[in-house]
Image 1 (cartoon, helix red, strand yellow):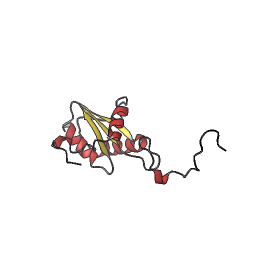
Image 2 (image 1 turned 45 degrees about the vertical axis):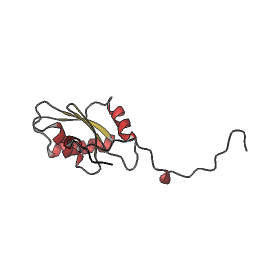
Image 3 (image 1 turned 45 degrees about the horizontal axis):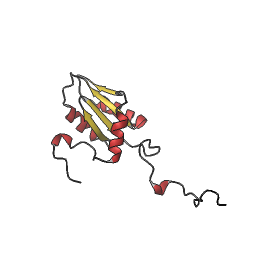
Image 4 (image 1 turned 120 degrees about the vertical axis):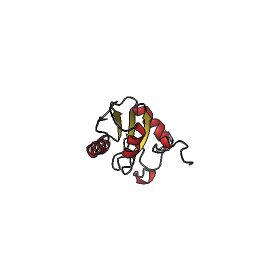
Length: 125
């Protein structure tokens, strides 16, 4: 996949059907983390990490007094391990981190699902 042409979009996750689904689901979410005049501090990053662990998909709202641009904040939060920036829209950032044990939004790979018996059609015994 080619690298993003705009340096502002370099922190976004690749465009996939999953990203499209997450953007749709994120529309109805309320912001869980708000960033104010202090900017992106260690406590804000810790709060976002905890919220991602609990919810997998979160919305972050930047206050108008935030000293950093939305792209700088997204890049900082996207540097965390396995955190994906799904969307930057206005002063809102949508983040996603897959839960390794119980993913809500991604399907579990076929190899890790339990094997089922042979399928039988209707009326066959």
